Length: 439
Image (cartoon, rainbow, N blue to C red; front, side, top):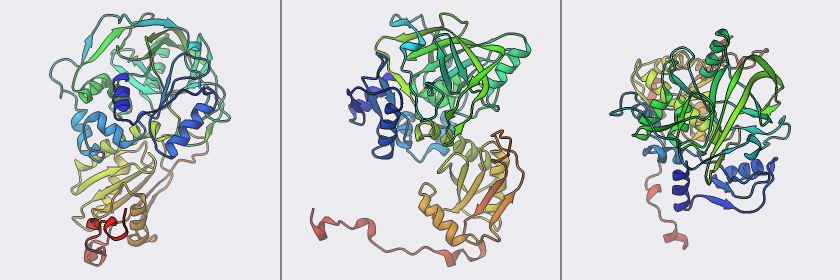
């Protein structure tokens, strides 16, 4: 990650502050204010309670993520599956290296203990990727899970029901043993991106990371558990999930913008912490673009791949303004085309696609004003809206607040498309206002 940090610094994109910053709320507040304005990455060099600098909003824009992969900011759907394609890398995806000389031991309390939202139950680690191996096959998995600091020996983690790590943990419990895992804070960017990819259960996400990087991921052994971790990771917390043990965790301000109440969640026993010399600690404001953008992009790319395989005319897919809404841009080829797209999206993205809007090729699907304009001017509420009631959601809430699906056909009526030709004022893009009004 530090190599990417240096690239940001050299390009003049990085904001750096040496002013003392409180770990409780202030760091998160400054980050959110910057995200609302310039949206630049920020390096805090003087955070209370720790010697480590804190980097935030690193991956908070589509342009920065595209830059990491060497593609255009609107090329994710067309390029992601090609870049992440398993088997696309010649030779092995991982390479073992000796234990680095620049590692030092630390305690969890030496790290930045950041409290984000007003009612959070305590400090949280929000950017850590958990690396664990499937108990029977040994296939490694990468996934994001929030972790509440309790002590130097204990963290409490929310393992989402549909995540592979949850399945690993439950399988290990059935086998009567704990599940060893490592928390990676500040791995190389491609590892971070791979962790957000919705890949099959049996897929090694470190291989996905290697394909994204175009080079093997260098792996080094852990000190306290039998796992290999990416060697360039800034901070690694080693430990194990205790079997058949759940303890109170929360409340926490989650990615949907609400507080998740206190619940009994997994217990992570900390066995050791290793920190690189001059390490930089990565932090994420939950619910910000930095948290959800990688998920939105990978889900959009996967949806694009799946529906393109069965339907013609699919031009692009975006999950905007939030991961629960899928917007599809098509070139209409037959009457009812958009309806088939909506049903295909719901069938191929059952976990996330709560809403789906389909627009024509003349609508910029990345501009929500344009998408809304298409809905207002091309969709009849009594004819072009599809409601799928009582459809289960990824979110297991007792009241089923997230159940159901809604699709909107915001394309021009197929037989009368010529009546929906958009007006154009010739020459707008060529106008030089300085020539008329001065500089």
